[in-house]
Length: 171
Figure 1: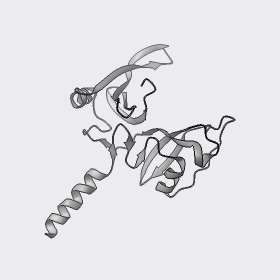
Figure 2: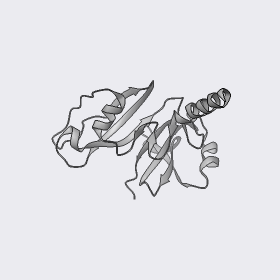
Figure 3: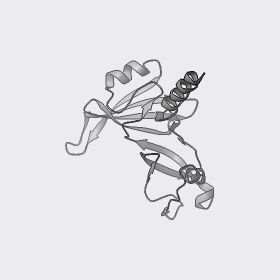
Figure 4: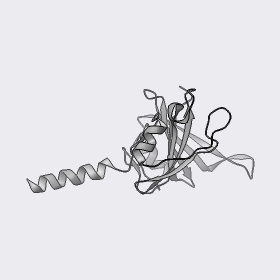
């Protein structure tokens, strides 16, 4: 019985952390209110808002040892605690992996293999130095039509360097 409990605990620990989906990275979820984010992390974040009530820059936080960049948006209600919510979550932490097993360092071929039965798109990035599109920087998107979101893999020289979960404005 003790062995079963230990194995179950390890299984839950292994699969319950460092997970990326089309709607979340670990416990940080799209649509989460700013106040919920502060409560979850146990941190108070200072934001500088512009004249329209939007944060002037993305929020960079460390939570449970993982660094995140979070873009907040507003639903039009006044006040930080009322109207701000998580619009985009990004991380390049090497402990992260998707529910399908993709991780930092995965190749484009691995992504295609893992997500070939999903709604995917691949875009070449833009090189400002040459003023042209380049395959050295690419974006691999997995679209979740039901959630109105997407999981974007940022790829440099054929390898995933970060994950980004955001709302799909094309829905």
